[in-house]
Image (tube, rainbow, N blue to C red; front, side, top):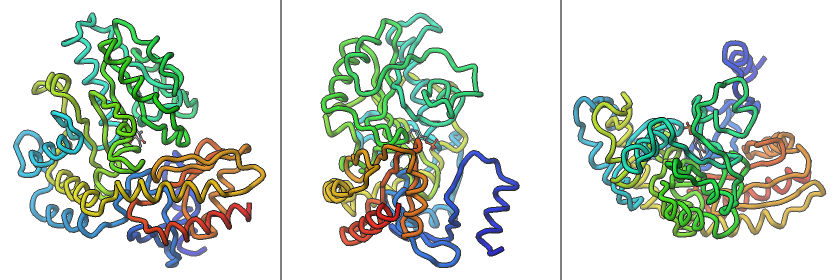
Length: 399
Ligand SMILES: *Cc1c(COP(=O)(O)O)cnc(C)c1O
């Protein structure tokens, strides 16, 4: 058995089988590329589910991590540290919001946003205690905690983990009228992905986000966009809601907020909502630690300095056009916005396609059996994108 096979067997024997990875063991990454143990190079077209917008091991972010790791890693929020202030100010400037709440994982940011919306519901809107409701969309993915999976419509995510936390109402995704009709006096907030990433890059109809924002405003309901996957340049705007100028009251950020170097997430939002938390009402031991803030700051610097948002917009148009020219009898649809793209088959061919892609030096992941997402690091060049596209085209021919 070679080393890769041994490592895969070891993981299989001792690990918990909550993932089904492709049989490749990665050892190194740089920019848009990763290398396996044998030194074979691949295009990373998943970017750790859009966590690597700045590319693998970006030198500026690695340097910030190194510098801060040897200086002060964790202060806890019992004391101040020199990076939290600048980082939360930066997050607010970036998003046009008034306050930021730093957390670690995406799910934790979503949990924090749910708590913030409920708190606002009771303290500001006057919803009777214990009655606050949050409206979510069918097909959502917001993480893996018990509360979050309780309102998932994906049986694989939800079943076996009940009883579900009460207080959530599900409406069809992409139907603004259905969402507006679901808003009631006890509704505190709406939680939505501007594009449903895990569902397979489901893009709502034009005008949806704007109409939802309008309905929320009219009904005095908070709107929270989960921009953990769509945010930070992925769709060709800093935040996906900007495509429709549908500014929410809150949004959750994560994934690319640390350029893949460290878990960093945050809720950013209006002072009228986040200002309701008081000492002792919420917290996280690692949230806002100096290492996370230094890494997050460097990750945001890279987005700005390298104009990655503009690059995603420009290359996204090119890539979608190339993908649109693909031909295969079982190909159903190609869609995308910025560099968040997907191809969907009529039959469950996605896993087999990913296997062919791997053989051609492209790493991508199937979702829901029929869809493969293509989300390369935003640092990809046009020439690299074209090379990756040719491999995708050839892999499709092999299928
Ligand atoms: C990945 C993701 C999350 C969860 O993030 P974790 O860091 O895995 O907890 C939440 N929402 C969306 C939209 C995501 O894509």
